[in-house]
Length: 171
Image 1 (cartoon, one colour):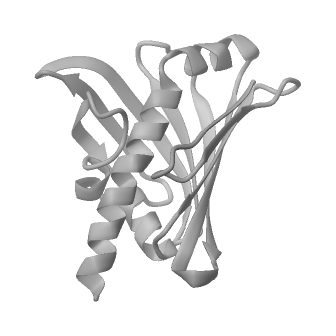
Image 2 (image 1 turned 180 degrees about the vertical axis):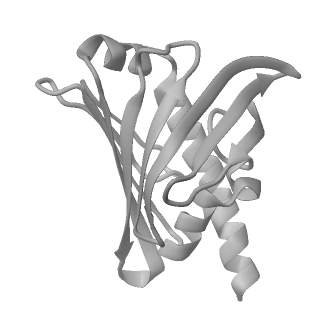
Image 3 (image 1 turned 120 degrees about the vertical axis):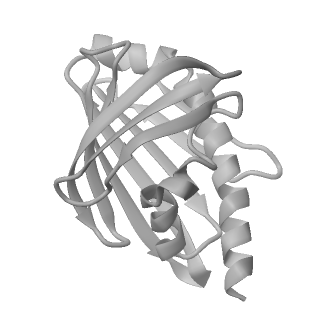
């Protein structure tokens, strides 16, 4: 499965499922410097402003994005808990890479190992390349069927708005 989405106002998001290996690859470019895109992934106050679909809120229990750290948060809709996520942070290279696990309590067998690479581009832009590896194709199918594409697209649109604000604050 390979999908991409594009509108006239949002950059294209590549979401690609390898037919031979249980992985999902997501690639997206941002009109912001690499350090800001990275910061938006590790600062819990910023993460709450963009991660996930528009209809979902976030309550963070733990957000320790450093090598050896961990995270746990609850997704909420209209004040009700709808999903619980957690992970271990295996490696953080400042402004370059995050390697973590990603677990969804409601699908305990679908834990992924995620690598996020923050690639500096000319003109103060950044490409985020994320690769998720899961145990089997069934787990990957569950990930893809969970509405991941909507969450990725809406979340990255919110991240664009946040990054624009942070970039403007620097000037």
